[in-house]
Length: 207
Image 1 (spheres, rainbow, N blue to C red):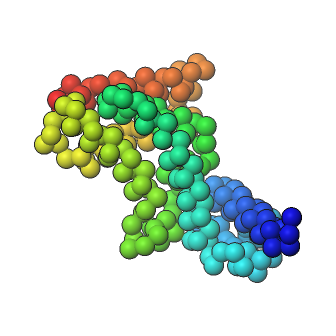
Image 2 (tube, rainbow, N blue to C red; image 1 turned 60 degrees about the horizontal axis):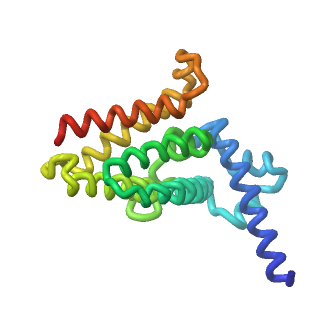
């Protein structure tokens, strides 16, 4: 390995170290109470070192969001092979639930932890990472409409927001340990069954 390659690898390793430290403190302390100095102390480097890689904590949080959403969207692609649009919608919900349960800290960072929009937006105050994942749902739902599963006059954005809100509520109940009352070891299956029941009811109501 040459000097250039080694230095780039070292830079990537430092970025990863900073991001891991930042993620830990964001989740433990919240956005407002997390500081660059606190992150530097956690990884045992100086604040100046962090500023070589990230200009402020907004850029740090954005970098964490970008990585998390890339991971989630890459896992969504497995549903593309499901031929029927409605079954693809169900599979997408299942995959969303699976991602959240397997990556609870990332899900918290992406959708639950409070943070100002400038820490999440790439440009023009648009939450681009969130919109990319929403577009995935919007595309699948639109295919369901074209296939006749839902009425053509339905507002796609409102319908998708309703579906997303249901999934998010279901996941949040689990992540906040409110599903423990069922006293079983099948939370993912229970949540997937609940989501399928929800979209089946939507199909009946809005066909």
